[in-house]
Amino acid sequence: MSGQRILVVKLGALGDFVQSLGPFAAIRHHHPKAQITLLTTAPFRRFAEASRWFDQVWTDDRPGFAQIGGWLELRRRLRGGRFDRVYDLQTSDRSGAYYRLFWPGPRPEWSGIAAGCSHPHANPNRDTLHTIDRQAEQLRIAGIPSAPAADLGWVAADASRFAVGDAAVVLVPGGARHRPDKRWPADRFAALARRLVDKGCHPVLLGGEAEAEILAAVAAAVPEAQNLCGRTDLFDLVALARAARAAVGNDTGPMHLIAAAGCPSLMLFSAASDPALCAPRGDRVAIRQASDLTHLTVEDVLEALSGWLGRC
Image 1 (cartoon, helix red, strand yellow):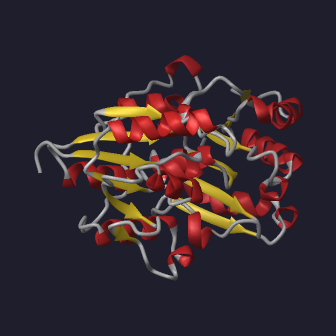
Image 2 (cartoon, rainbow, N blue to C red; image 1 turned 30 degrees about the vertical axis):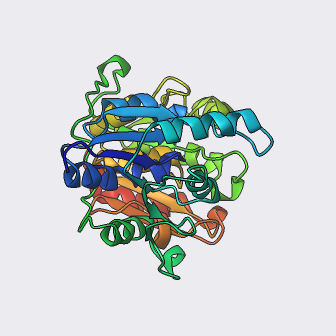
């Protein structure tokens, strides 16, 4: 419908944001003439603004429970948006609370799990569905029949300033600091990097400043590896993914983006997360899982990579 005002809520984290790219496209396709606003968090604002899907991107500062002024400002902004419909793709307690900020009304149509909303995703087994399937079902209930796979063809990015060459293999050894059980040990990544160098490949290490220590340890063990710690944004990750032969990493956000960009990607899962619920999909994605990642050997990883490396 022309003139509709639509709000899409997706706050993070990066892996979840990437798995909402298909739903973003589906919402835009279903509402081609609507004014669509995304409510997200600061790390994703510039990336979302560059996409083809949104007319506006708002940043949510996520006020704490006791920050009454922040909640009142968010309420003023949401109500002032005069939205006809909201697609809550975050479906968390926080985003559900945003529905209540419209009290006493008028309330927009709302797709999500907020109590009393117009288009509830009421499947009691929704939390057993893969993120992609769960969001697709939510959209079907709201009248959007299908959601495509993530497509990053719109991303304008150039990896030439990094000079990684045509034998690059991306390694992502980090992950959330508070989830060390989701990380393959640094010495295994170092051993893998050494084996890749011996095969003629060029290991490229990616991660943020919070992961500087682990990336520095791998780079110290394998000086031939290129350490890009803290030097890349989301656009750079897409560019490097396009340039690389393959990527290996833990269950962490950058690997989701790299896989979505089409890079052959091997993701390593421990018992701390379930690939059946959250792993990237596609014929260029492979999974290796061990209850404890210390049990996963370098040989296991190299075997999984073998079909993608070719002759570096």
